[in-house]
Image 1 (cartoon, rainbow, N blue to C red):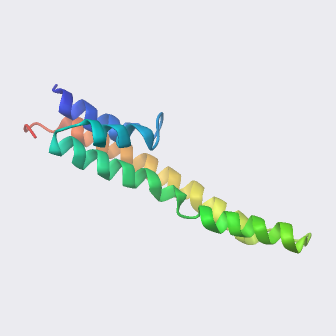
Image 2 (spheres, rainbow, N blue to C red):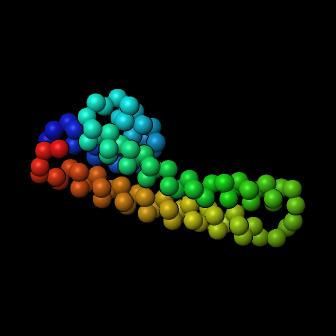
Length: 107
């Protein structure tokens, strides 16, 4: 197995251990175009669960300033969306990493 495939697969698998850092380093450190392509795709997929973060922060701000004792629906629903997106991204990255490792042709 060649190094390009391993680094490309590790970019996807890094969702479990290095998150955004490994694909970013692989993108800037690698000279190979295929590794850069997979690193960019992995990096973008690692950022997807952060989409609801502004909603969570906004709902926390409203909860603090309003001081109401009611259930924070927006914060809870945004957090649940973040969890669901994280699970989807985890599964997608594992599948993509395995596919990269199983490719028979040379990049």
